[in-house]
Every structure is written in structure tokens, then in C-alpha cells.
Image: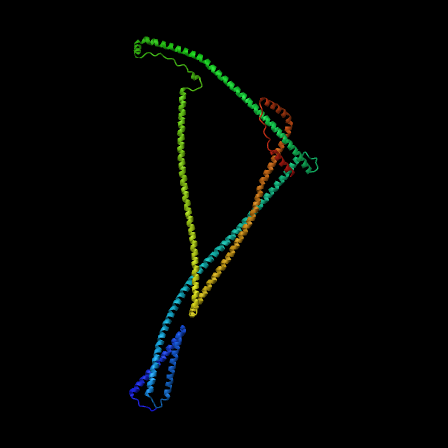
Length: 602
């Protein structure tokens, strides 16, 4: 191609275009650096689409820069050659460059917009990350608080374990003391058992001696027999015969004694009736004699009274005559005023005075005293009734007041008990609710922390991983503390079970020894029964001996008693029929003799 001349103005324009092109290339290189930085940010943020788009933009910019650089490298080589610039090529190249520049500017604007979006997203992710860090810090604080609470609970648990250990030691000491007491009680029981066994031996010896004495006393008149069994059988037969004979004799004696007593009662009744009749007759005779004496005394008393009345009349006339002679005026005046009244002799005693009834004056006094006594009795009765009524009302008031006070006290105690029960129930419910809330909160916190850790482990850095490691360590320590607490609680349960087993063994041993103690007490209670039995047997023997003595004496006196009883029965038949004889008594003495014989045979 032939070179054409270029005007300076055109050359200036072309140079300006070249400068603009260089500036655009420089801006493209800067944009390429920005695009590469944005690509790295998108790669870190995980935005694959933006990263691919920025990679395409960066490759185009790199290709453009390389093409321009190559053109720039080629230009110095041809600088020595003559410049042949065609305006058409330059215009087309400038237009192409301008079009490419516009495209690059559009792509750069898009890249800037994408970069802004990436920056906003990056800031949002940073803010979310800060929020997550704050949430993690709050969770860590809550975990530290939970750790402190768990530590405090562990300390409380340790304190409880110490208290339970002290209680266990006290229980062991109490068990030791109880064992020592049981040993002392066992020693005392053994001593009591020894004493009781010695007493039982003494009682047995006394029984044997008593049996020997009884056997000797029963077999004293049978010494000629060879064996004790024959002696016992003979004694048994003899005692049976004697007991039957004695029973029949005792029945006969009782019948005779009963007939004798009935005859004596009949005779005594007859004697008393005769004495009463005699006394009644004597009393009637005495009363008749008294009546005769009163009649006999009435005539001389009447004559004596008449004589006394005549003497009184004479003496009154003798006294009246000198008065009439000495004072006639007065007598006349007196005669005018009122007639003279002769002196009357005293009335003779009435016949009622000789009788047994009281006089009229005495009757009035007696009736007055009876009336007064009745009035006094009624007054005292009314006063006592009023006093009793007052006392009853006071007693009722006191009882009512006491019942009201007791009712108030009972109501107060019931109210206090109900309040205490309600407070206990509320406290138990509060404790349960607090434990449940703490457990649920701890579980929720653990679940939330685990989920947060599982979500954010991939996106957090080394510091966050360290924090998570610390949190995991704290969780492990808490879990280890919980395991230690669980093991300690299991050990405590085992110790409590061991203590319960020891207590059960102690209770079983105490129950076993209690049965032995009860047996010893039962054996001790049997002693008074045996002593009583010995006393009863001794009394039976004394009664049998007395009965034998009575039987012997009855044999001697039976000959004398029978005729006497026949004579008395005859006399009783004369006086009147005797009442029927009663039925014989029960076989008490027969049972007594049989018991004595059985004891002797044993």
C-alpha cells in the first residue's frame, strides 16, 4: 500500500485516541485486578455463578491486555521502518477498540455492580457472623453459668454426701451401740435364764422331794409290798375304796347333818314361837293388870280430889266471911257492879291423861315442830335444788367453754397442719418445677449449642474452632462431673442398701433374741403357776388328810349320831313333817381325790 500524507490535526486526533486507548487499557488492567479480587471474594463466599462470570471477564481482560502488549511489543521493532498508516484501518481499529472499550466498560460496570453485591453480601455475612459470635458468646456465658450451677450442685451433692457419710457413721455408731446394748441385754437374759433355770431346778427338786414325801405318806402303811407299782396300784385301789366309802359316809353324814340341822331349826322355830306366845300372853296380862290398877287408882284419886275440893270450898268461905264483915260498902258496891264469883277448884284430871296418847298442847307443839321441820326440809330441798341447778349450769358453761376452747385449738391445729402440708406440697412442687426447668433449660441449651456448632463448624475459623473446642471441653468436664455424681450417687445407694441390709440383719437378730426372751418370759410366767399348783396339791393333800381324819372320827361317832338322829327325826315327825332332803352335792371332793391320786401315780 502506498503511504498517504496525514495532516497534523488528524494525527493529533489519532494520538489522542491512542492515549485514550492506553488509558482504557490501563483501566482495563486495574479492572482486571479488581475482577480477580472479586473472584477470590466470590470463591471464599461460595458464589459459584458470580465467580464463573468474573473468571470470564478476567480472561477477556487478560486476552485484551496480552493482545495490546503484543501489539506494543511489535511496534518498537517496526519503529525503524517507515510509518504507513491508513486512515481506514485506523478508523476501523479505533471503532473496534471503541466498541471493545464500550463492551469492556459495560462488563466493568456489571463487574462493579457484582462487586458491590458481593461486598454487601460479604458485609451481611460478616454481620451474621458477628451475630453468631455474639450468640455463641451468650451461649458460652450460659454454659459457664450452667457450669457454675453444676459446680454448686456438685458441691451441694458433695455436702450431702458428707452429711450422708456422717449419718452413715452415726448409724454405724448407733448400730454398734444397739449391738452392745443387745449384747448386754443378752448377757442379762442369759443371767436371768441361768437364775430361772436354777430356780426351776430348785422347784423340780422341791417337786421331787414333795413327790417323795407324798409317795412316802401314801405308802407308809404299805411297806410290806415288793415293788412301787404294786404299792401304787394297791394304794390306788385302797384310796378308791376309801374315797367311795368316804363319799358314801360323807353323803350319809351330810344327810344326817342336814336332818339334824333341820330338826334343830324346827325345834328352834317351835321354841321361838312358844316364847313369843308366852311373851304375848305376859304382855296382855301386864296390860290388863295396868288397866285394873288404873281403874283401882281412879276411885281413890277421885275421892281424894273431891275431899280436896270440899276443903278448898271451906277455906274459901272462911276467907270470904271476914272480908264481908269488915268491908260491907265494898261488898255492896261489888254486888252492884258484878256478882261474886266463887273460887272454883281445879279441874280433876281427865281420863285422857291416863291414856297413852299425848296432850293437846304437846300435840300442837309436836305438830308445830313437824310443820317447821317439813318447812325446813322443803327449804333445804329448794336450796339444794337451786344450788344443784346453779352448779349444773356452771358445769355446763365450763364444759361448753372447755369444748369451745378445745374445738378452737383443734381447728387451729388442723389449720396449721393443713398450712404446713400445703407449704410442704408447694415447696416440693417448686423444687420439682425448678429441677424440671433446669433440666429442660440445660437440655435445650445443649441441643441449641450442638446444633449451632454442627451448623457453624464448617464456616468458622481457627478462633471459633478453639472456642468450640473449649466449649466441648467444658461439656466433657460437665459430663464427667455428671458421671462422677452418678457414680457417687450409685455408691451412696449401695452404701444405703448395705446399711439397710445391716439394719435388717440387726432387726432379724433382735427378733430372734426377742423370741428367746419371750420364751424365757413364758418360762418365768410358768413358775407362779407351778408354785400355785404345788400349793393347790398341798392343800388337796391337807384336805384329804382332814377328810380321812374326819372319816375316822365319823366312824367312831356314827354309832352315837344315828340313834340321836333317829330320835330327833321321830320328834320332828311328832311336831310336824320335815322338808324334803336336798340333792347330793357335786363330785368336787371326788375330783380332788382323783387329782391327788393321779399326781401320786405320776
